Length: 431
Image 1 (cartoon, rainbow, N blue to C red):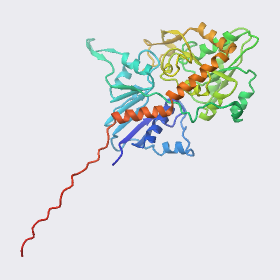
Image 2 (tube, rainbow, N blue to C red; image 1 turned 90 degrees about the vertical axis):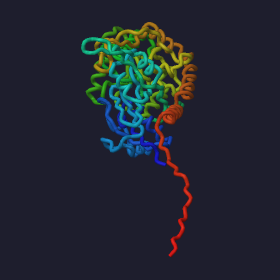
Image 3 (cartoon, one colour; image 1 turned 180 degrees about the horizontal axis):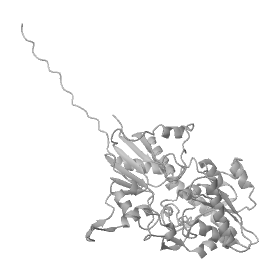
Image 4 (cartoon, helix red, strand yellow; image 1 turned 60 degrees about the vertical axis):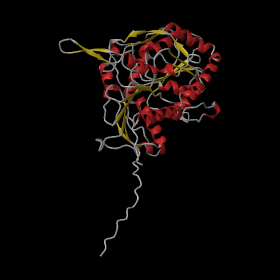
């Protein structure tokens, strides 16, 4: 019996969050061995291309699935991993997979894109809730109401599971002496907060990851202290170019110049880093906690991966990452929703009428101080958080969920069995 023909359109070969998501989804489908999988490889904005290594057996499996466009026949199942306004119904059954949106409402184009598909899979409860709660009044040219624009397509949550073969706890004595590890060894401070994420458009306090405000708050919190922690920032704006690195350094310098006094050190890690090196970074003994002031996440993948180092996490109490950052174990910063600043608006993606999270800066500052001064009290929480995420948000758990979804929704090839027919013997004609 032929397997159902499944085509996945996605940025499979890019250094991006959606690239990681795409590789996970395709690997999960390949592992099931239930489908004939092909990939239409797409780019993802300005992020670098060429993540897959043909010398890596696992990557080679993905590369072997890539086919040229256009398609020669209609897929039984079409899966598109991207932002919803790009969704197109191509297959006999079409699935849109997306991290969705970081604000409290999405654009009409997102809803219309979702309604072109047969099923929408969001990365988090936040993603699906935003889709369901966004409703627009549809009007004709004269301004008369023509009903509403709201999501009509069935939805489900497909979280982004952490690969525990790539992200796991490593004892300090077992850390290999790589270039990255040795660079971290040279840092004078024994206590470092870590931030991982892109520094996106927006003035200080208004960029989506809230990198500028996080940096400023860190500097203000520990300035003029006799003993100070450091902040390691694994960030960039777009590509891993020298120009981008210089731009990031200028931003850091500008914020430092705006804070008076004796300031704590900030270290920049710029460019693309392999999973293995990221795990070494997370497990380095000088890295004590991951910190994020993000205004909104569709999921928040680096936060989940960091939990496997069994170290504590500080993050806002809103959006996609609260699915896995259990409030009993993670340190969640309170705050309130506020309209996004005009400097962060992106046409077709982030609209000026939408809101996202503004943290309580004073609370965050006190929390950082307490982590630095009373770290042992948070180590137990970090270990419990790591176990919770490994148990409930692993790649294996994600694979189980997508197999369940596909078994329930995807068309199946049916083998036609003809009934057995008895041979009929005709009488012989007499000569």
